Amino acid sequence: MRIVLVGPPGAGKGTQATRLAEKLSIPHISTGDLFRANISRQTELGKLAKSYMDAGNLVPDEVTIAMAKDRMEQPDAENGFLLDGFPRNVSQAEALGELLETEAIKLDAVLDLEVPEEEVVKRIAGRRICRNDSSHVFHVTYSPAKKEGVCDVCGGELYQRDDDSEETVRKRLEVYHTQTEPIIDYYKAQGLVVTISSLGPVEEITQRALEALKRED
Ligand code: AP5
Ligand code: ZN
Image 1 (cartoon, protein in one colour):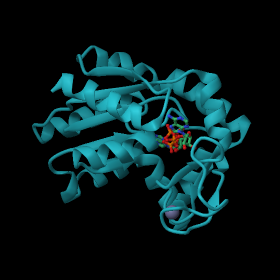
Image 2 (cartoon, protein in one colour; image 1 turned 60 degrees about the vertical axis):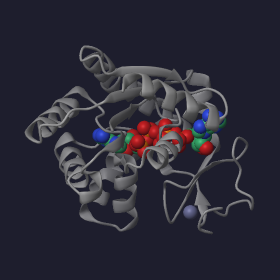
Image 3 (cartoon, helix red, strand yellow; image 1 turned 90 degrees about the vertical axis):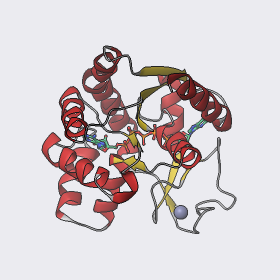
């Protein structure tokens, strides 16, 4: 399956993407995680991306699209993928459309995770992620690590993302409403959007998503 996951910051895209990718046997491709991996390796791309991410803005399309394309062309993505955080505006959606068209493949669904804004703020304020792998995600009250500050998966140090400050989160939400939400209408016009609530226990949301995706099959 080829799926795009969309939703505001803190909707649980990363949390659900990890679980769905495993259940559907497709790679989880997160542009946010790819940028963070570049930041920790201190690459030129990482340095460029950090300045935009810390301000809550989108990284320029040119570099983002090139990075996403490169990742989608890896052999493990040949038969499907779950895109998390890409596309994030209409021009990225158009670029993705062109890329898929040259390969004569189509998206199967765009899964839209809905969550109220006050919940987003609580989720982001308590989020802690692993220094070794930013897909290892915890929450101080909703899903605490067994040992405070230590990743259950790999023993890495847990920290708060630089862009999770209240001020930056507000900016990220504004960017989501103005730049990312329009892609939902863009994909609605193609009949691809499946909307589910992202409230409740993590496992229940995964089941909800799998059932909604099955109906789209
Ligand atoms: P990115 O990393 O994609 O961040 P985001 O979209 O803002 O989303 P988040 O990672 O904040 O949240 P999430 O929905 O994954 O939630 P999570 O599962 O962690 O992007 C970061 C930045 O990179 C952007 O601002 C931009 O600068 C740049 N960027 C990335 N892609 C780009 C692109 N395509 N173009 C340009 N720039 C780009 O969950 C949040 C917390 O809630 C966690 O603590 C979790 O444990 C908890 N939680 C999850 N589910 C539940 C639940 N059901 N109940 C209770 N708690 C829960
Ligand atoms: Zn870890």
